[in-house]
Length: 511
Image 1: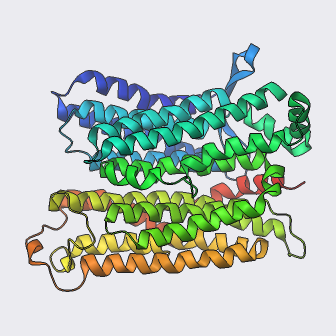
Image 2: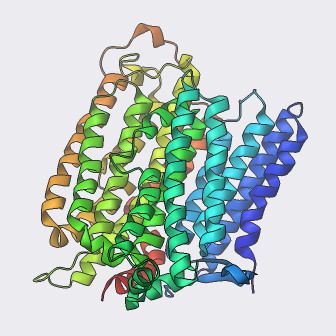
Image 3: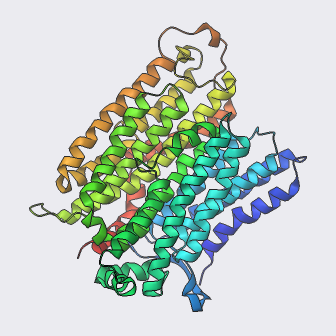
C-alpha cells in the first residue's frame, strides 16, 4: 500500500504547525517555509498526475484500513480523475495565494499557517472516501477560512465572516444529519459502497425500512443537497458569498473562489449523483430551474455591481452554475436522443473542465485585483479608474487575457468547458440550455463594461504615474496565463485524464 495521499495531506498540515510556532519576528523565514511547503505539495500532485493511469476510471493511490470498525469507519483514501484534478488545482492555487500575500505584516506566521491548514483540509476533502474523516476535512476547510476573513479582511469583515460561518455550518449540520440517517439504515459511511447500494436500489429500501417513511430517501437527499448547495453556492443559498469574497483579502479570495467553491461541486459529483440519482430525477425540473437561476441571475447581479470584487464574486457563481446545469441534466432520462450516454459524458467532461478552468481563471483575476489594490491604496470601484491601459499596458494585457478567458473566448481555457456543457445539455434539457445562454450574453456585457470603464477611454490623471507590473509580478502571473492558452488549445491535457472517470459516472447514473 502506498501512502502518497496521506503524505500529500500531511505536508501542508505539518508545515502549518511549524510556521505557526515560529512567531511573527522571523517574517521572511515564515514566508519562505510556507511557500516551500506549498511547492512540495505541488511537486507531489504533479508526480501523482504523471503516475496516474488515465485509462483506468477507477480509484488509484488507494489507502484503506479499519479505523473504528465498530462504527463502520475506515481510513479510506483514493483518487480517480475527478479527485486528482481537484488535488492538482489546489496545489496550483495555494502557492500563488501565498506569493500574493507575501507582504502581509500582521501576524504573518498565523496567516500562512491558516493558509496551509486550509490546503490540508482541501486535500483531505478531495481524497477521503469515508464520510467520517471526509467530514473532518470538510470542516477543517471552514475554520481557517473563517479566521482568514475575520482577522485580515476589510472594514466589514466581522459580519462577512460570521455570515460565511453560519451559512456553511447550517449546510454542514444538514449534511451530517443526512449521513447519520444513512449510517443507521445501512451501517456504512463508505461512499463507494453507498453508490453500489444506490445503483441496485437497496439504499432507498433500507432507508424506508429503517424509518418507516415512504419519502425518507428524498428528505435525506435534500439535507445533503443543502450542505453542498451552500458551498457552491446555488441561488438562493448564495448571499454569504459576495460579502465574504469582497471583504476577504484578495489572496484569500483566490483560495475561496479558486478551490473552496469547488468543494460543493465536488460533493455533487462524488456523493449526490452516485448515491441519490433516483431522488435527483424525482425533482429534476426544480433543480434545473435552480441551475438556470444560478447562471442567469448571478450574471445580472454582476452587471449591477460597482465594486470589482463583488462583480467577480457574482461572476464566480455564474460560472459554477454551468457545472450544476451539466450535472443535473446528466441524470435525465431522455427518449429520442441519439447516443444519450455520449451527451451525458460530454456535459460531465465539460463540468470537470469548467471546475478546473474557473479555479485557474478566477484566482488569476483576484490576483490582478490584489496587485491593483496594492497600487491604488485599496481602490477597486468600477468608476475609480479609466484609461489606465496607457500607463500600465502589460498589466492591462495580461488581465485582459484572464477576463476574456472568463468570458469564454475561443482559444482560451474558458471556452472548451462551456462548449462541452452546452453540447451535452442541449439534447438532454433543451429548454434549460436555451435559457442559460442568456447568462453567456450578460457575462459578455459586464466583462466588456469592466474593460471599457477601467482600462479604456480618457486617462484619469490621478493614475498618470501608476506603475506597471514588476518583473517578479510578471513571473507570478505568467504560469496561470500560460495554462489558459495551453488548455484552450489542448484541453485533452485534462480530458484525457478525467474521461474514463466520467464514463464510469455515466454508467452509475444509468439504471
